[in-house]
Image 1: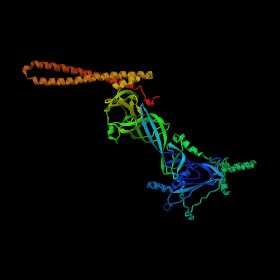
Image 2: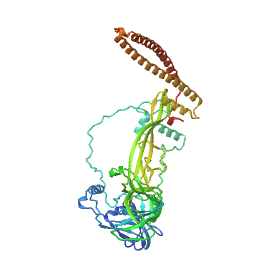
Image 3: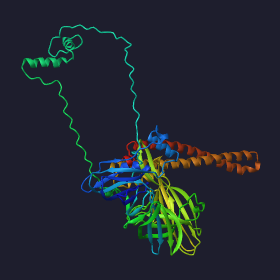
Image 4: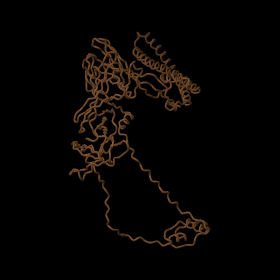
Amino acid sequence: MESKQLPVRRVVVYRNGVAYFERGGRVNADNVQFQLRKENIGDFLATLAVLERGGQSVRSASFPVSLEKDEEDMDPELSAALDRWDGKKKRTGELRRVTLELGKGEHDLSVGYLAETPLWRPSYRLVVDQGGKALLQAWGIVQNQSGEDWKDVEVALVAGAPIAFESTLAEPVIPARPVVTDDGEAIAYVPEGETTYERPEMPGPGALGGVGSSKMGRGMAGGAAKPADQDESQEEAAMEGMEMAPPALAPAPVAEPPAYSLVPRDSSGLARVQAQTGATRYEVPHRVTIPDKSATMVLLVNKEVHGEAVYLYSPDGGVPDSYVHPFRVARFKNESGGLLERGPIAVFEKGAFLGQGIMESLPDGGRATVPFALVRSLTLHKEVTQDQRNARLYSIEMGELTIERDQVTIFAYHVENGDKSQARVLIKHQLSPGATLWDPPKGTEKLSGDQEVLSPVDIPASGAADLMLEERQAFRRRVEFRSTEARTAVRDYLKSESVPQQERDTLELILKHAAQLQALDDQETALTREQRELEKGTQETRRSLQAVKDNQQATALRRELTDRLTLGTRRLDELTKELVELRLRRTEQELRLRDAKQGIAILPPDRRK
């Protein structure tokens, strides 16, 4: 787009394919003409803002309308959608003339509008130095395909993408209208009539008129029917010589809405608004000339930041060897004061090129870790073990105890260094869903989303080092009060001073009954084991006696086996009696424990006050 009367003074390029153009100058004419690309007229009409020093004098904006022969009967929006679908979106560069009609005399105008333009692209350089310092450079690449040269213009690049849709205001739209025909009217059905009779008025005040009443008859005979009570009140007012109010108040006249005045907008403030809404704008401090159909690189950032070149273990499916070897990465902090958009970055150190990588969008104050090489002198192996730890009282409801335990997963990283210099490796660890990192190593950082962490480990030259990361994830399950983990959970709960005394007494009584019940269970287990062993021994003794019963030389052996069988049988009888008594006591203890449990209820933590 081009206007010799109003040259381009300022260009603000965004990251979504649009740019804001600001033109200005003095015009001693009654119109201003713009040469616009055909496809940009809609955007121009949708975003045009004009300001004149001393007042608003733009009267109208006219533009040509033409329809392709094959699109005359097609809805413009459908035509545009088909163009995009077919990949044939028209970018012919064909120019159209838009004319702004002005008042007579000289005008000092400032015109701003949006138009399509290639988005600007960032490119970065990082020069790593000693002591954790680095030089960060950010360049912006601006392309001019507007159809005119940008001569000595102010350029601003915005790291953000405001909503900017493609407008079709330049395309004529004729909506479909309903078709009305006159076929005449004919009543094909003859309705039946109704006959009513006038009856004497019902006595008493406030009688209601209805079908067959005298008041309804008067209303029907007089033309337009009136309510009976209204007719009666008018008659009474006439008898008393009073002025009767109208039956219904006429609606108050609706005030005309105030006329809206189009206050000229300061077009130079459009870009500032974007800066105030959170987008980062880079103002180029000097004027730039960008010829048509060319590109220019402008320096945006040139600042010393905290940065270093380290190693990163981050397995990537596209690089199979990364499961064993770490990447070499550039790591730095964004101290530019604004957002750095996603773009390529080249890394240098000691006058040498180290590699290239892609930096994701980085907010001010954020840290970037950009891989640019794979290092095979470092090898890494990982082992995983699992365990369950701790027992916390979660709830007691309806006599059921629920405890909470920790599922512990330990990740052991073993790193070996085959180089003759010390190395620091950042291990990128993906946390399991729902798990948290327990007691993270010193220097561990959380990445975005809190589901990934970076933990450092230093490996001596030609040596090895280990890094342990422990994940914990809570799970709940119901247990018996007499179990060891249940009693541990209750005792830990009672250590809190906030437990009410009545609740404390009940829990201590439950612990007492549970401990006694567990002791009875242990005794029963021991006696049952002894009973099985004795039964087995007596059976073997009986088989031995059976084998030597006819041997005359085994008299002493038969006597010994008989005594052993007698003692075993006697002990079995005693064990049977002890088990019966023990089971009775156990049943009584279970009843005591059950009654004690009914007297307490502890809600889950999320339901406690």
